[in-house]
Length: 102
Image 1 (cartoon, rainbow, N blue to C red):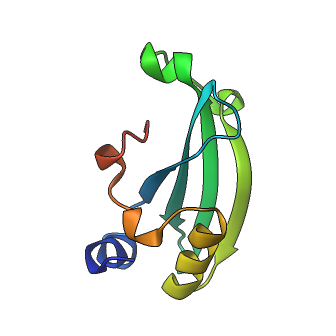
Image 2: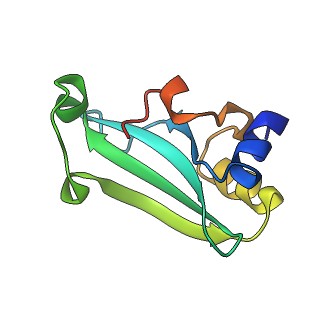
């Protein structure tokens, strides 16, 4: 993972994300990493129907499909978890840089 991303996770405690291939062609998918209060990191993939994102429709938790969720203790483990999901850890970035819908 790039230094600026590591700093974002550890210093500002802000989430990062990256695009990934969706399980279904009618969805968009991302992997995201969120720093938790105890110093660990939640790694999760989310898939959201394309029409909700494309039409800028408000969506709720029930519209989000979580494909994989893990909690890891180190940045090295974040890299491994992200790689296992088929995403290059160097592609992690601030969510607005990869259209992650906040």
